[in-house]
Length: 444
Image 1 (cartoon, rainbow, N blue to C red):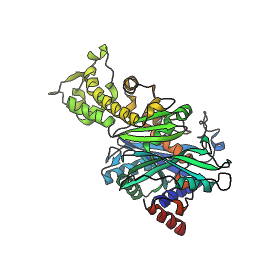
Image 2 (tube, rainbow, N blue to C red):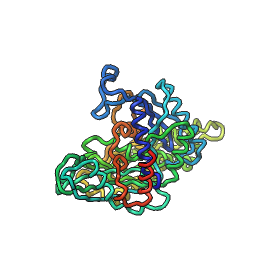
Image 3 (cartoon, rainbow, N blue to C red):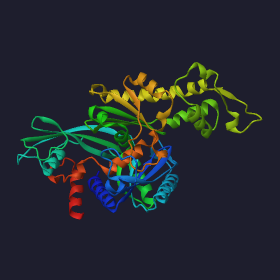
Image 4 (tube, rainbow, N blue to C red):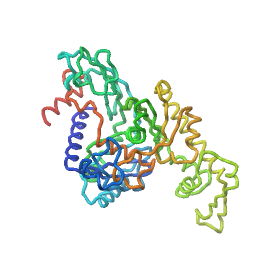
């Protein structure tokens, strides 16, 4: 944690500098694919005539000018497992996106899953000396939050104020300028394992890129897949990826909880491969074309010829019914959703005013999954796609790209975090961070 404050401040400065130059890249490092989107920030006026349909509110300051995806290598459970393989995959995706955009990109904002996220709810309160709330008052109230002992070898990824109260007026999004005697805050802090973040930083550096920001995939998927009412009233976003399943809960347009289940679509593919004794590429193809979680009477008669996939027509003349494939896939999807329900119950999701659940991510496209999820999770469930963004190619508008599109929105409209304010050194509870702040002020 010693260099947390200044590194996050430095990344915010790099992001602002990159946006002023006009071009920045977004990188989604997943277990099944690595996606890169190149954004150009030119303001809404220059895009008005070039696109038939305008972008939604809040997204009008940028457009996507380059997009590329490649098969992920060296990433398991959302964490880098083989550095050189992942570096090659990142280079491939970034170079293809740069070629489509016709510009060179130096700065990237990355999102990743995994790293065992853990959420904390913090609270702080201070008296207002001047009678009105200023930036300095917000810095003081953030520094008054009692930081829990979140463990060795862990870092804070997000630390966002989610609610302010001036005297007894609660539910304020931005209290600056409000008159009162006391200011209090509720803050959501997300900590993750340090090693996966350091591996990602090192990998991006080896690709001759500078990191201008980092976000949790669960957070990014939530801000792109949940509509405004869901973010306001309370909803959970379940991002079903390849190697892991991300969970995020939003209310009042702020994330208040995030977690990860270390299972995803790749585990379903592995089950098919082992159950039917076919190679993994064949199992992936069977899952994509014939997969599902809800068997009907027709599925017993719908036969799948495995010999055409294995290529051994002489000896391998096996056929399986679609019902058998569903019988292999359904238990794993039930297991993943049961784990999700345990995490939502632990987070107190049932106490929110609205309890809608949105499924997104590549593995959410299995037929019948929304019906199975509504039975297991016991809530209103819908399938979510990422919001429309100007210039986004049709090929990257599916649920599998929710994290990548959400990171674009995170890049363009970042929520205030504690490192956006000049935290007073003498008021901060963590001694290591005091030294970091002092170093930052002396040397930046």
